[in-house]
Image (cartoon, rainbow, N blue to C red; front, side, top):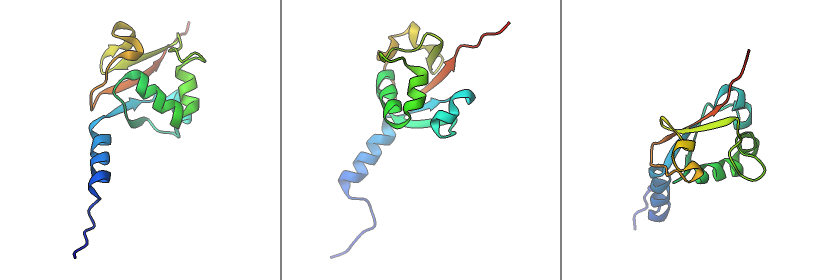
Length: 111
């Protein structure tokens, strides 16, 4: 009987599924302290809503900076999937594909 260092099939397929559904969340500098200092987060999600649920689980302070207490996107925050604002697509139900980039963009004001 030979032993292999390869992952068991179930674990290997779970890891492949995670990679295949992974999207990147770009975190702006003012919010990075809520993401452990990360400029980008990689997580599995098939919709913007699912990505936000992942943020809520793993980075609750970042989530609260993006969404209000009802789970809606804060008025002063825009989310882009690649180059499209989710408000111009299907909102939080905007579908994500593997490799998509979700950019958190807080509104900037000044005078």
